[in-house]
Image (cartoon, rainbow, N blue to C red; front, side):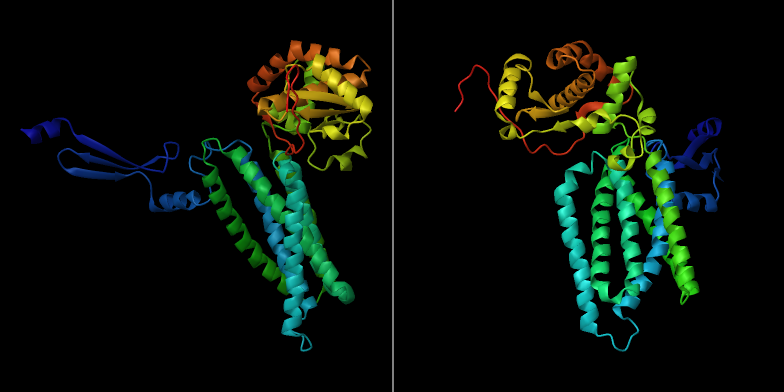
Length: 435
């Protein structure tokens, strides 16, 4: 009886393979009616190929990452490949300068030179973290590019070291110092970019797959670098031509990589660009539009070549040490606290065209974002020579909420401002007695 039912209503089972719903693909169909039939949907090669790709792309790709992930990774892998090829040339020159292969070279001498080189790099990394660690997250594009340029400088120092035996220690220590900046900046900015790429709380998976991609690029680069080093051995012209050509390509690939990024977090420059456009047109630019307008090199390198006015954010200082104010500035500060900002968690002080923000010690992320936008508005009005505090407060009352709402609708993460850590804060209490 049951067999006849099975004949009339065959049982069909489909076999699917994949680690997530977005990556599932059918591998087989099993039919029982009443004989057992198995129909394979994919061949062995396709299955192996898919498993191979799983080691290099995040789970759920491409839906689990942002659209700028692929172009960035392509250019990043190419610049990494050129780096590993050049590493073989610079390492060969460095070992030659230390004395590898020379009968006169001593083990203790070479060890001491290598020790000084590494020690300089370690100390440089600590100092760089101390002075710029809080800035890496807010300017990930710029520091990503600067990090690789510093790496180029470090490799150049290694390649130059055999040419100046008397200054060998100084040159290799300078190169190690340069690469220490690279190590800190590239690692920190990579973490920030990984968080940006992750759309499904899969930052760890993206980081792991990025490691696989980098390992593959390293192996290919080392093989090509060994081949190039062997071909150019004893030919300084060929070595320098190869190194400089690869360095130029490395710089170009890095520039293209950071230009591919469309970050949706607010930092000083992006906030300035957005506010200026909003004041002029009443509209908010999208992250894609802003990405083509923001600087990817340090601002001082581009302002000298540009005849346009300085961006608003260059005249804003977030976090002012109140004890540095003179008598008249302190009087204005107290007046502002009692009239314009009696309910705010920040105060604005205008000093010779620069607007400084005094942040309350109990301020939230939203307060800091609002204080910075308020300061940008004040800078804009300072340029137009209007009554500062009244005009600024009037603009904030009329437009700030609309501005923030439009930011969110345009795709911006408008809840907080990526900035330096604010080390100077203050506390004020109006009409209350404090200890």
